[in-house]
Image (cartoon, rainbow, N blue to C red):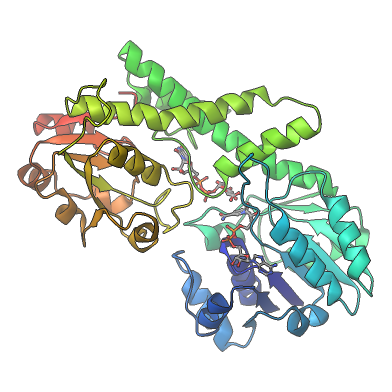
Length: 434
Ligand code: NAD
Ligand code: UGA
C-alpha cells in the first residue's frame, strides 16, 4: 500500500519507519525543511533506539521518502496518517492549529478516495470540525478514521511492531477494511469502534497511567510520614494480579510531552461536556507538588534554612539525568529541568550529566555546567541528585563516588540506589517514600 505520514516527529517518523519496513511505500511529510533535508540522508532529529537503522534501511530499499510537499505524496496514497503535534496552550487545552493546517493541506491535494487517519491525540468533539474543513477543500472522496498511538518514547519501534492493541475508530466498513489490512502484519488485539470512543480510549489510557504514578507518589509521601518503606508497600500491592506493579514507581512526578498535557486536556474536555474530572485534578495537583517536595528534601539534606529564599547559595550540586525518562533525549516537561530551575532560583550551582539529553538542555539552560560523564559531574560537589533513572547510573561505583563527592550525600529521586548498601558505605541517603 502507498501511504503518507504527515509529521516527522516521534509518532510520525516511527509510524513511517515501521510501515515501510513492513513493505509499504511511505512518504513522510514535514513542514520543517531542515528536518526533511536531514532525514533524506538518514539523520534522525532525536534519539530513539533502533529508529535510525529502520529509517536508513528503508530509504535504501526505496520504500521510505521524505518531503515537504503534500502534492508529491498525498495523491499517490490510499491512507494519510496525521501525526502532527497537539501541544498544550496556556489554559491546558490542546493547540489544534497544526492539526487543522495538516488536514486542510491534505484535503487540497486529494485526487482520489483517501482515508485520512488521525494518529495525533486530539480532543473529543473536534472530528466534525476537521471533516468540515476537509469537505471545504477536497475535490475527491475521502473518509476519516481515528487510530490513536500508544507508543512510548525509548521503546517506540518495539511498541509499534508489538502493541497491546490497535484501535480503529470509524463507522465506515471500507475504512475499517483498509486499516485492518494495513495492520495485518502487526500483533496486538484489534478494537474496532467509533471515532469518539477511539479518542476517548487514548485520553483515558494516559489519564489512568498518570493516576497510577500520582497514586504511587501519594502513598510514598504517606510512607515518609509513617516511617514505612514505599518500595515494599507497592511491591506488596503490585503482587495482586488485578493491580500489577507497572506505573506504580514513585519518583519526582510524571513528565514528558504526553501525560502532563493529556491530563490537562482531558480535564478541559470534561469541562466542555459539562463534567468535572475531579480525580484528574487531584492527579495533576499531586504531580505538581511532587517536585516541590523534592526541592524541600534537597534543602533539608543540605542543612539549608527553609525560611531563607536563596539558601542554597554556594552549594555545588551534581544532577544526574535531564531527560524526562531514560532512553530518550526528550526534555519536554522534564521534571529534571523544573527541579534545576528551582535550584538555580535558590542560588545553587549546578553541574549536570545525561547520556543523551545534554544538547537539548543546553538550548534552554546554557549557563549550568555539563560534563562528559557522571563521575565528572560529581567531582567536589556537595551532593548527588539523581533524577532520571538511566540504567548506566545503577552501575556507578559507589566507593568512587564517595571519594570524589565533597560531602557523601545522595538525594535519589527514583529510588534507584540500594538503600542498605549506600547507608552501609556511610552516605547520607534520601529517597522517595523510604
Ligand atoms: P512532535 O512534536 O515530535 O512532531 C510533530 C511534527 O509535526 C514536527 O516535526 C512538526 O514539524 C510537524 N508538523 C507540524 N505541523 C505540520 C504540518 N502542517 N504539516 C506537516 N508537518 C507538520 O510530536 P509527537 O511527539 O510525534 O506527537 C504527535 C502527536 O502524537 C501528539 O498529538 C501527541 O500527543 C501524540 N502522541 C505522542 C507520543 C509520543 O510518545 N511522543 C505517543 C503517542 C501519541
Ligand atoms: C506515555 C504513555 O506511556 C504511552 O503509552 C503514550 O503513547 C504516550 O505517553 C503518549 O501519549 O505520548 P511516554 O510519554 O513516552 O509515554 O512516557 P512514559 O513511559 O509513560 O512515562 C511518563 C512519565 O511518567 C515519565 O516522566 C516517567 O518517569 C514517569 N513514571 C512512569 C513514573 O514516575 N513512575 C512510573 O511508575 C512510570
